[in-house]
Length: 97
Image (cartoon, rainbow, N blue to C red; front, side):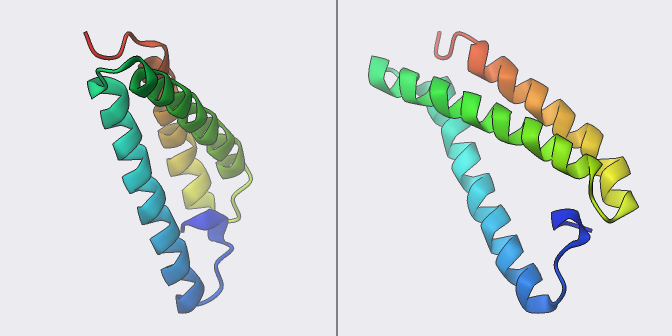
């Protein structure tokens, strides 16, 4: 049900899961940086990285519309759309107050 239903065997699913987990950990780190950075450089890196995450979620929403698995299309399209909007909100926010 993940990766658009395009993973054919257990090995591909394992690699896909590791890529997804690594990406998720990186995204969590970016959100923490964006919200906790005290230096101007850290704030700028966090802001640009959040824009990249928002774009990634928006593109993923489009990809989910074309998923081979109907459940993935119906469930994850709105989930990634909401995630894109939330990432956009963090990107345009003030960061550390």
